[in-house]
Length: 241
Length: 224
Image (cartoon, rainbow over all chains, first blue to last red; front, side, top):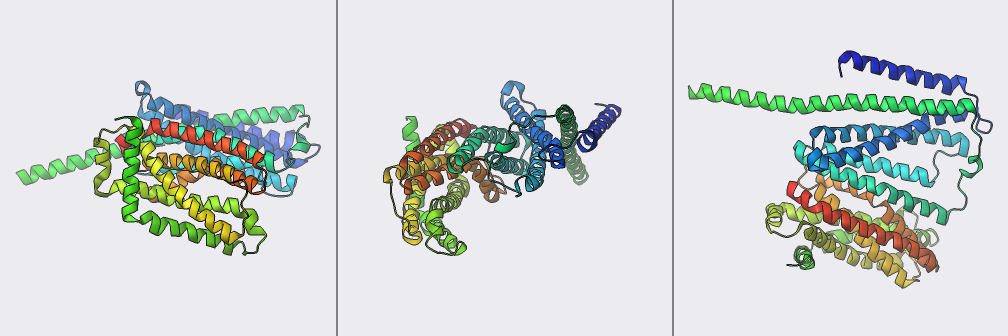
C-alpha cells in the first residue's frame, strides 16, 4: 500500500473512532439502570471483539504457515502482529471491564467465568509473544510459534469450560443476572455496532502497520548480514593482496 | 520396534537418569515440601483455613514442582548434545514425546504421594473418597506432564528457556489446576458424585494434550 493510501486509511480510522467517541459520550442516552457507566461498554465490547478477532487471525495465519503449500514468511509475521494487537486489546478489555465493574458490581474484579477466562487468555498469549521474542532463525521461530499459537487457541475453549464449571458448580447466581434482559435503545444499538466496526478498521490498520514494521525488521537482519559479508570479503581481499 | 516399546525405552532412560543423578529426589521433592510449608506460613496456620484450602494448595505446590521437573527433563537432553542423539536414534517423534511425558508423570505421581502425605499431616486434612482422589490425581498428572512436555520441547535450545517454560505451561494447564483442586475438594467434602465430572474433564484434557503432543513433537524436535 502506498504511503498516501495508508495515510488516508489512517485518517479514516481516526474519523471513525472520533464518531464513536461522539456517539458513545454525548449522542447516546445514559442507561436506565447503569446511568453513564454504560458508555464504557462502547469501548469494552469492541476491545474484546478485537482481541478475539486478533487471536483468530493468529490461529488461521499459523495454520497457513504450517501447511507446506501455503508457507510464506508473511503468515508468520501476520500471526505475530495480530497476536500483539490481540494482547494489547485483551489488556484494555480487562482494565475497562474492571473500571466498569467498580460502580456496577461494587468491586473491580469478580471471579466470574468470563473475566477469569479472559485473564487466562491474556497470559496464554503473553507467553506466545514471549516465545516469539526469543531469538532464533525465522524458519525455526515460525514452526515453534505456529504450533504454540494453535495449542493456545485450542486451549481457550477448554479453559473457558473449566472456569464456567468452576463458577456454576460452586457459586450460586452470578452478578450478571439482573441486567440480562435489558432492552437496548435504538441509538445505543447503533453506537455499539458503529463502535465495533470502527475498532475493526482500527485493528486492520494496526496489524498492517505492525506487519510493515516486522518486514522491515526482517529486511534489516538480512541487510546487516550482507553488509557483514561484504566487509569480511573486503578485509580478506586486502589481506590477500 | 512398536510405538509403546519405543516410548517405554525413552521413559526408562529418563527415569534411570533421575534415579542415578537424584536431582528429582534431592531437589524437586524438597522444593515441593518447602512450598507446602510456605503456604502454611502465608495463611497463618490455623486449623480452619488450611484444611479448606488444602486441595488448591496441594495442586499449586505440585504445579510449581512440575515446572522444575519439565525443565529438568529437557536440561538432560541439552547436556552433551544428547538431543542430537535422540534425533538420530530413529525413534518415532510421538513415541519420544509419550516416553518423556510418561517419565515426568511417574516422577510427579511419586511427588504427589509424598506431598499428599505432608498435606494430610500438616494441614489436618481428613481423607475420604480415596478412589476418586487417585483417579483425579492420575488424570491430572498425565495432562500436566503431557502439556509440559510439549512446551518443554517448544522452548528447547532457546536462550531464555528456563524462564519461558513456566510462562507457557502455567496458563495452559489452568483447567488441570481447577479440575484437580475441585475434584479433590469435592471428594474431601464427601461428595464424590460432584468430583466425577471434574475427573472427566481431566481425562479429556489429558487425551487432547497427548494427541497434540504426539503430532507436534516430531517436527519440533527436528527443528530445535
